[in-house]
Image 1 (tube, helix red, strand yellow):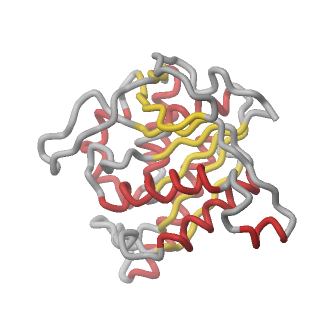
Image 2: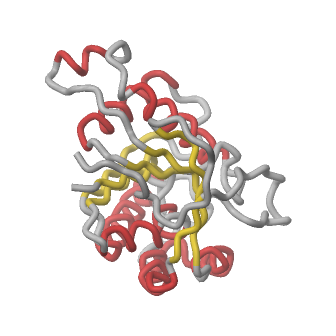
Length: 245
């Protein structure tokens, strides 16, 4: 079975940044999982929420609804501090993600780039760093060995991709995105992607902001790591060269 894991920062990231690939590979029979580190309690747009706790509850429900639209096999919403991923314990967070990688055993992982994507959000940058370390360390016996004593075994992610872009958003802080190495045709998944984002009702004011990403006929990625040393090549399939386990 092929397995694709997506690691994000906030509820709605799974839709606007990765929704096309998630929907496409689900339709191809790939098991899809999404790990979202925060519940969006620090978001600017709060919908009807009158407190942080209410905002968390609302956005959690929206995340679940969006994942149903994308038909995510295994959605996992964590509760790290929204807007505070720069100050959480790095090793503990990587250990948490490594355990989830060892449990789910994806061949391919997609996440943000270290620049923080076109939005330049610091939480996005931290998710990239946490996920990159987890993908490396989950495959090593000398990292978090206590997990292995509990019955898990090391797992090497065959390919790690950062979502990237061919243009930047001038209204946002400057970013330096990674070069495009994979272009995924998601024209048939656009309406699913839009519907998944619209499931985040509290974030409706952001729809015009993310329209360009949601309506793009392709999602572009950068191959950050792979198990076999190789020259960079242009790809159209994130699972190209992947061995099923």
